[in-house]
Length: 562
Image (cartoon, rainbow, N blue to C red; front, top):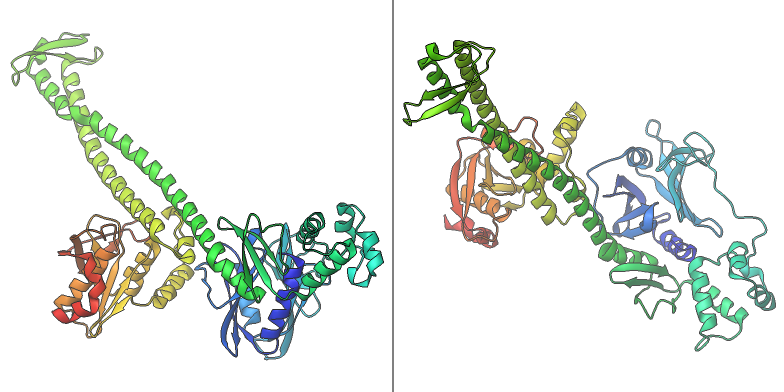
């Protein structure tokens, strides 16, 4: 984030939020970042803070996605800064350090408490820190060498011999601008990389610009300091620069979008460019985790099928045992093979023998091989069924990843081995709270219908929202969402079951088909697969309906037809 952009943005934030708002809540953003939800006179305003990567900086807008995950830093800020007011917002002189001076209240006595929320947007190394009234670090987003909780805050200050351009005369500026670029960037305050690139472009392309180097610099400095507008430059959907002065050096290769304020401009580029990029990255990451697991399961399934093929001689072993007992007296000691007439085929069969075993022991050996193979067939078929079910579940999760368009939902869809999932009391409590926040997708006079949008949401609505007596629906043998129907009167009608089936068909892999088979049963008949992933279930006592997914467009009329 350029220094001049931050300077203009801090002015905008001060005018809008200082003295007129308070922090209602602090939470995490999907895939990184912290958000402050401000209550203002004009409604809610969300400030999003990013300290790493290309997103480094602040975005203030009305729209925000909350992460389902809550990390330590956000939780600490939420508990300490709840209802805190903004007393002041400042930008450190000639550096990219934004300071929020906050006045909160002590939880126990209700006394006023001072806090400082420092945002270091310094390029490669950035951080978000909460300080107390004595500038001692309470907590920070990232661990750094210069700061740690419990110690006084330290920030690298510019050297004392830096030159303030606003204190120079025109002749001094002319003399200074004759020096090499490396000297200017290290000695001249405000001569940021973006400022330097534009200055040297205008110097080499004097047409339409002031000829004197001193006047050219003073003109550009005035544009940067006053910051009347905000410009976003992007190429092929990627942000190239954000600036408060026009960047002529980017115009030949980039598209330019002009805004009256930094907040409106950053909100636009975050919603239009950054958020879609984030969704794509999260989708790729989630798909990678499931494709990796799918590859392992497919390989294991192939091995089990090969093992099952190796057991195809199971009946042959028993038959060999029977044949050996029929000629038991003819088996000579130390024989390695015997030729026996097979009464089934009418032909002689050569049966291998263990020369160290007697005739009866050889026959018994074949019976044991038969029993072992029989057990192997049963276990292998059982394992194949488990792997096929897991493969089907993984394919369903891959379908979810491909269809989800919400960053917070995608963030929570990565594959995690069921063995690593801790079913602690706090986690179960958290899931119960999340389930209560899920709203019905459709509601008529008698029933509310809930639809899961991912494996974890399927698990939440089935076992968190659904209760005994509610209807549960899922498209048969294809990836899809769980649907829960809750009757307000406790009694379901035929139309309620049909609507639940239509919703389950619409939110499934077969949604473009003309007719889809959907299983419906009581939620009490649906059970988690032990050791399975979220949303992986088995059920009994189901009834199958055949419905057209396209009927979801007319649910209101459908409710009246029965």
